[in-house]
Structures are given as C-alpha cells and as structure tokens.
Length: 111
Image 1 (tube, rainbow, N blue to C red):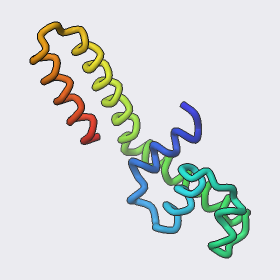
Image 2: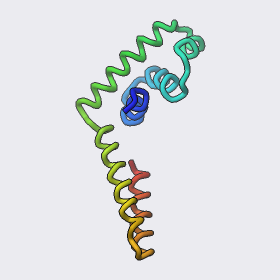
Image 3: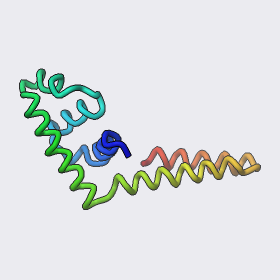
C-alpha cells in the first residue's frame, strides 16, 4: 500500500483521536496535497515545524493502528464486501441478486 494511502486510511480511522491542530495539518498534507510551506504560512509556523508535526502525528497514528488494528480490519471487511458483490453478480435470480447487492452496499456504507 502506498505510504500516502496508508496515512489517509489511518487518518480516517483515528483522526478524531488527534488534536484539531494535528488533524488539520495531516488533512492538508495528505488529503489536500499541500506543501509544507503552504501549510505553514497561514498558520505562522515554519516548514520544519510542519514537518515535525507530521512526523510525530504519523508515529501516533501508526501506534494506534499497531495497538487497535482498525484500519487493517476495515480494509479486510471492504475486500469481503467486494467479494460478496462479485459473487452476487453471478446469481441468476434477480430478486436474490438485488437483495444481496443492496445489503452489501448498506454494509459498506457503515464502514
């Protein structure tokens, strides 16, 4: 998995456990793809300070995942829903197929 995608997933899972400042910087860096300078300028902090916050927050997120494992489980559950949907497409009975697809879509939304 690409490093950026990994941290986007970790941020999605554990972002609410971060401070608003940490979450904001991580979202700007990983989700909005802003540079260190673009993040630091409006916040009146240096590029180095932004980089330091990102590195510390990455470690925090990795620590959460190591202890809790929610992001990995979430990824495996999404894969299972995808497998169920693919199998459901092979069902010839339209009512059963549509029911399975509808329910897997609902389940995937809950993730």
